[in-house]
Image (cartoon, rainbow, N blue to C red):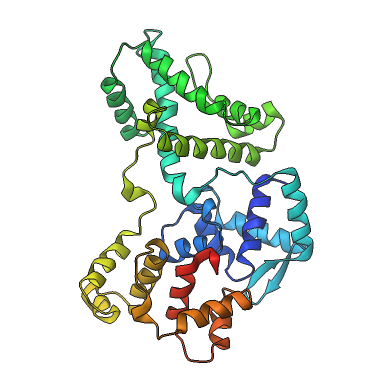
Length: 352
């Protein structure tokens, strides 16, 4: 692998196993909150990478797929690509050098992590100027909402201004002491103060003699670890926990349109009636139902399946180690719709 990012992309392609196109992976890395992208992330066990690489372009991903194929790391499978034996060997070598970073959890944390980082980086900059009695500085974060939030947060904190940086330092380094030395360095080099501007990933790569995208993922791993820890231990990290609080509608809830469908399901309407009421295609309502099967363990899929069909679909998927709808449909003894197969796959997710 020429970069850490290449290794991650090849790993994701190995999980997709030729059953989804590169476009599906593109949407996942970008963090597109569509029913299909959310479902695929859970179904193929790569939801941890949801939204972790928002700057990636479709063109770059297609070019990388082309390069992988030319190097013999991918085999063509119908309209998609699956990782070849040579590709799997490359992946084993890659993970011997770079074990998967265990704290990255894009689906659960990425949205909160982005907000947390913006607040934290500006907070550190603000209090470092505050203790120097300097009121004029160029905010590291340009987002007006973030700036307003930090101002209000500082005002809401009790105690004198010298206690804030002391508490912040104590909590922050309490967390950093739990990660590797390299992760500590990457994170600290990203921070800005009155005497130093935070470094870019390119500059960090030069400074620490590491590959650029690896530096990015080390930073992300640390950030996700922090958000998870401060959320679990609010008493210990009270100051940082406040910065990690983000409205739940921007977290892992179902999409807004799916929630509207859910309310109508609860009122007893059929999918056809819901489609008519919402002026949407029946297939769109089915997408929403599949998303609900992923997201809500309490969502009952039995009204949409004949007795025994759920067990039959699950058995075939596991026996033949496939999540391809067409393959499963062709092996079923009795007729089943793609919607019904998707519902079952959604309910069991990675456990298929």
